Every structure is written in structure tokens, then in C-alpha cells.
Image 1 (cartoon, one colour):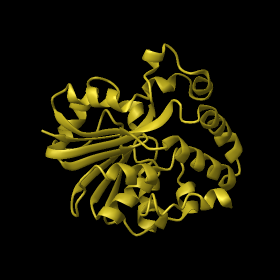
Image 2: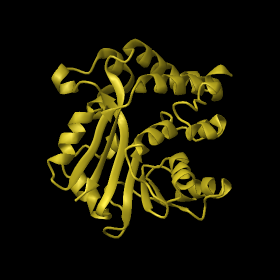
Image 3: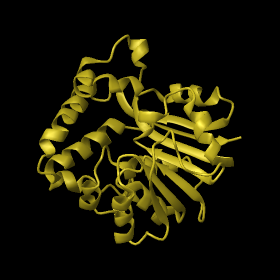
Image 4: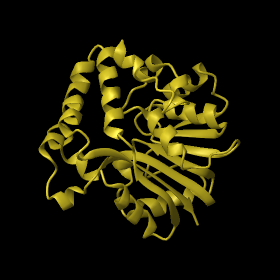
Length: 254
């Protein structure tokens, strides 16, 4: 299982490499979430005892990682995954006392104002966070001085600037790529609100290669892996890093 072995990369992702690839792939809902989170967290200041909202937490891998690696209290919020299913994951791996699962839509969050020290979102913000009014809404839930960090699929050039979505991308994801903004687009989108100070906005180094490794591992691991991951592998191979990456963006609330 060479592709699975390729998911253990202690030199680049030492924390993520402590997690069993099969366990992580069993919770698969997109690109390797722990690689994205570990990279993003380098630009955050996550400390023991913080209360962190994991927004778009999926089946729970990122919430487990936050609880174990940073010893924070996590609220795992996702619209598509029932809270009972996610909570079972947390209980099974021994972090049920640190992580609480909530089924919630990103525009109707059931939390008190200024109730989180940080909000983290991995491979989800592109679905709900591009609207001009979303950051003002989300920052209501962050305490003054609190942090926001997200990792999202990105283009190295805006589709509007290109005048089109490149055909090899459009064939696989269609108009979804319109929300795959550059890191600098996100910086502008957040800074113009004057609600946060953007502390980092960057493209992930060789993010497309990480995504390709993950897709190839999915082919090995899942019975229908070729059907689900084949088009992604073709897209990434055709792209070769020309357009595709991930944007990692962090900010601190004024």
C-alpha cells in the first residue's frame, strides 16, 4: 500500500504522521484535513484551555486533532453530519470530554456572542464564507483579540482575471471553482471589513501535490475510490500546480 504509506510524512507534518492513515481515510470528506490544519496552525496561537469552534468539521478528524494536539475545548459544528455520528467518533478515540458535536448551518450558528477564543475551518469556508456579509456575522462569536483561521481550495489567479475557469478544472468541479479564491483575495475580503487584522494569507507550498497524494491513497483504500478520486487525480495531474493550491488565512479580531 505505497499510497497509504505516502500519507505518513513526519518531516513535513510531524503531528499528522502520528495518526493512522486508514482511520483518517475512513473519515474522508475531501483533501487530507490534518495536513491542512497542521500547516494552518503554524500561523495561529492555539493554547491549552482555549474554546475553539471547528466550523465545517465534517466527520470529526480535525476536531480530534485540535483536542489532542493543542489541548483545547472544541465545538465541532457541521451541517451535513449528524451530531450523534460525530460524537461517537470523539468518544471512541477518547476525546469525548473535550469535543462537543453540534449539527448547525454556518449562517445560523446556535452560539452566544463572543463565546470562542478561536474559529478554525478546514476545507469548508469556500461553501459559505465568500459572501461580503459573512465575516461580520462570524466575528460576532469570537472574543475581542480572538483568532480566525481557515484553509480552503484556491486558485493562483482569480477566475475573473482569467476570464474563464480552466477547462480541466471546470470539467471536474464546474462553477464551484468560482469560490476558489486566491490568498490575496481573502486578505482583501477580510481586511476591508476593519473587523480583523489579517496575520497571514498564503498559498500552501505544493498543496496540489498533497491533494494528489491523498486522492491516490483514496483509490487504494476505498472500494469505489477510483470512481470518486479518478477525476480529481486527472485534474491535478493536468494542472501540475499551474492554477491549483490551497489558501491558508489567519486573522485576529480587533
